[in-house]
Structure formats: structure tokens, C-alpha cells
Amino acid sequence: MKFKAYIKVMPHKELLDPQGKTVANNMKNIDISNVEDVRIGKHIEMTLESSTAEEANTTVKNACEKLLANMIMETFEFRLEEIH
Image (cartoon, rainbow, N blue to C red; front, side, top):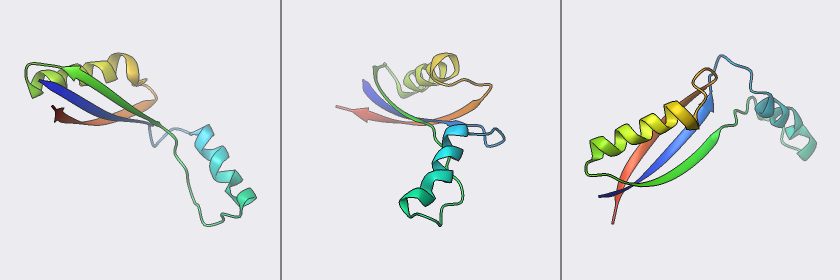
């Protein structure tokens, strides 16, 4: 079975997001003044072959925990779709 994983990696809410802060502070320079906060993360798409959805789920979770997200500074969430 083939699956596509859609992964979102974001900085922990408790941590400063300097890139997001810079974007939020510069919104006024392009005449956007009603933005209170910006958080910047990563969107990752992964296609994988697995015999079951559970196996695919485990593979994606391991990839996130071991490589795609810095677990000290970031959180992740994902969804899987079976593709044909």
C-alpha cells in the first residue's frame, strides 16, 4: 500500500520564534497592521510504501522524532492518506 504523509513541524509555543517575530514586526512595512503574531514552521510531504496504515504511521512518527523535527525546540503533527 502506498501512503502520503502531510507533516507540520512548528516551534514550541513557549519558545521565541525569531523568524516569525521578524515577519510580524515588518507587516507594517507593507501596510498590514492588524497582525498580532506570526509563527513559522515547516510543511513536509512524504510518500511511502507500507503493508499497513499502522506501519506507515510508525514510520512517519519515527522519521519526525529522529530527523524531521528537533524535539527540544519543535512539535509535529501529521496525517496519512492512502494513495493509489
